Length: 144
Image 1 (cartoon, rainbow, N blue to C red):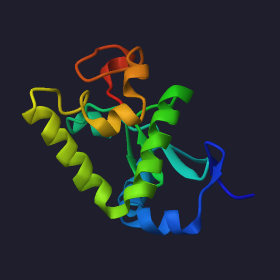
Image 2: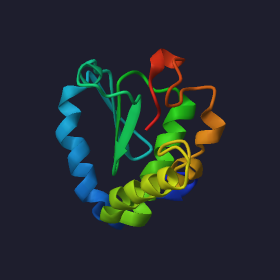
Image 3: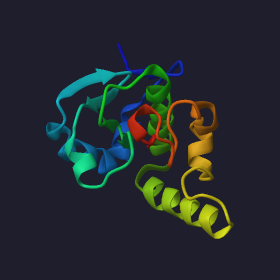
C-alpha cells in the first residue's frame, strides 16, 4: 500500500524532489538507536550524542527522514510530518528558504525559531506545551 500523510498518497516524485536532504538524514540515521518507517518516512529515535555536541533541539527533519533524540509523541511526529510535506513542496530549496525565514523573523525583531513561518505552518503554536526554544520542559529539547 502506498505511504499516506493527511490522506494523500506520497508520490515517487515527492521522494525524488526531497532526496538531496533525505540523504543527509540517511547519513545520520545509523547513529540513532531505533529506526522505523511511519507514514512513508524513516523515523530515527534515541541518541545522546547530539546533546553532547551542543544540539538543543528534540527533533529535526531532513527530507523523508526524521531524527529525534528521544521517542517521539504523536503531536511532535505530526509536526515533523508537516516539515516532510514542506520538503516535498520545496525540495532542495527548503533548507535555504527555511534559513531565510529565520533571518527574516530575527531581523524583524522576532525569534528565529518561534516566529519562522515554516514552524507556524507546522503547528508550532499548538505545541507550546510540548517544548519550545528556551523552555526547559520535555527535557529542555526544542522541536525541529
